[in-house]
Length: 171
Image (cartoon, rainbow, N blue to C red; front, side, top):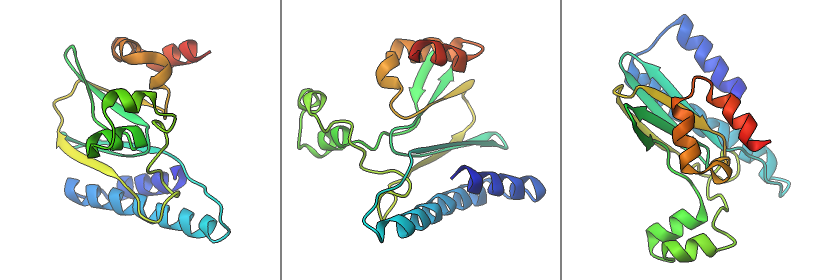
C-alpha cells in the first residue's frame, strides 16, 4: 500500500493534477490495491490486508480516505473532529439498529473490522474532501485510540510532537 501511494505521490510531484482528479486517482488506487491483495491471497483461503488512512492536502483543500479503524482527526482552534469513519462491526451494528450503543460496547465482536484493504472483494472506503479550514491533523494508527482515550487524542493535537507522546503512552 505504501509503495503504491509513494509511486502515486512521485507521479503527482512530477506532473500535478487538479484536486478532483487527485481525489479520483487516490480512490481508484486504493480500490486497485485492494483487488490485487484480495486476488492474490483469497485464492488459497488466506486473508491478508491492512487498515489504511490517507490525508492529502493541496490547493486549499484536503482529502481524507480510510478503510478499517485507522483514524484521522482534525483540529480547528480548540475543536477536535474525527474526519474518518471506523469500519467495525460494533459501529455498523449500532447504525443499522442491530444493537444499541451499550450492547455494542459489551459485544466481543465490537472491534471486528468490516473493511480493510485486501481483506474483502469490495473495499469499503470512506472518502471526503473539504476546504482547508483546519489548523492541524492527526493520524492515529488502528486501534491505538482505545488505549489513549479521547482526552489523550485531544491533548496530543496541541503537542508539537504527538508521535512522541503516543510512543510514551503505549509503552
